[in-house]
Image (tube, rainbow, N blue to C red; front, side, top):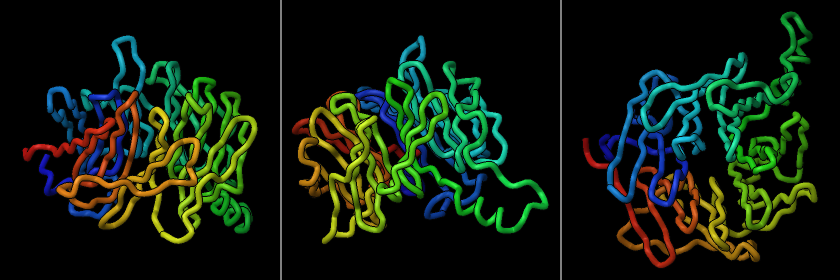
Length: 324
């Protein structure tokens, strides 16, 4: 892959040394057609190898790590519900949903969930065959010939999923354009209307909480402690950053900022998230939007448009795919 032509926009941490990402390599600012040429790539920091697979006919919308008997592997979710093994680039599963576009993928040690716009959530233990969590789609599309107002209400109620996360109890947290939500394994949906337009979400075992980030329009961070509820823990009133991703790694909370030219990484103690501030990166690192931050053990991965950063204690590393 040519770093001058590609742009990363999705990613997931597989380990402290392995990261999987997807890039589009046409001239678009971001992919707008399913035929946009995409590249799935797994990076191994120990060897320095980028193993890439071109995807010509699939629009990849989400990535996640998946626990298998052979170890942790990467999985990608296409807009049409195809499940791709990121190591081989081959399709290994499929959700048989109609009437939705898939956009979120989450897993724990035993399950993986694919989330689609409008309230479609499918779970699998094998990563191949998926069953609908909810007995019916949360928002049922009106039948042909229904009153026009019914269609207007339907489209207004559609939830656009940005990201999902899951804990070991199979509770799924949903970051969307509507509000923060949780969905139990039995299909019980709970909505938190005070958390509007959240685009990033993660689960943290140490705090036993989901953390959301988003903007409406100010940048905000929310903490959800099931079943106690959700509260806003950070609100940027003076600056106008656009938060895109949130992660927790052994104490600090980290937030990735998306900007058309600059972007950045914010951090604060997890006990004092109201103190979130931008951190300084090495001056020789070019400014770039941050699309995804993810953690594994003590490593913080930062996926930017043209490169991948790994922050560990006092070390800062920058990785760029080779040309070719």
